[in-house]
Image 1 (cartoon, rainbow, N blue to C red):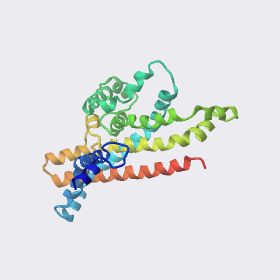
Image 2: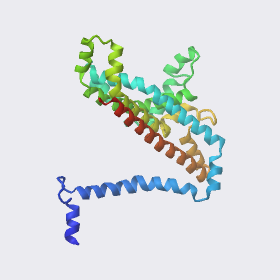
Image 3: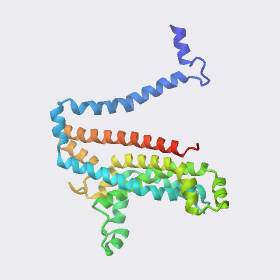
Image 4: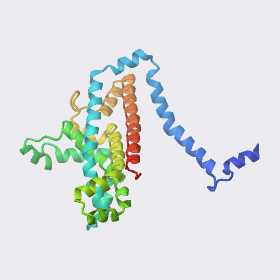
Length: 283
């Protein structure tokens, strides 16, 4: 028995030393820190019975907050696609001065505390902010409505699109574009027929990651959203409100919906990405 255990931990004939041991540690870490909390969230809301869960879900304020979170996250992720594609193109193909600094600044929303980014956006786009006061002259109000939510979600979701597209553009052979240009192809034909096909799966991946991040975003949104029920209140904020009211079934019901939608959206977008990847492969 001892020899068999040693052989298991030494990975037998595997070329990687300690493969099975590292695999067991990885599975244990995944189980305790990911699978167990998610399983608890899936099981806990139903402990009070199906009736209590359905009554917690039948809440007009919760439905309005969920719609605000989902719609604003989808709009922000869609707006990040052209912006992220242009930034990724500039980083991958452009050799402009200061491109290394720009490359580092792309990841700043991921490293910056969300509360700091939220306060910064609220200060800039507030009624008396530098940009907010200029937009107010034209009758445009960004803060304290859904436009502010979309702006905040675009800020935190842009790095996901850029980092998903940039490696694809770097690895795309430029000889294909040059050959198409020599054969008389126009710029839009080169983009559609040569560049768009391999980049499309990466854009779908970036959209899915930005959308999933936007659904659960909290800190960067609450300072600029206004947090008005049925108007600009997001689902993560409503979870905090329900917890402060000691309404644990209501809070876990909202969290369960967010979890299920996030998992479903990632699975759906993963399937669509694989479908387009197969479609873009040469016959």
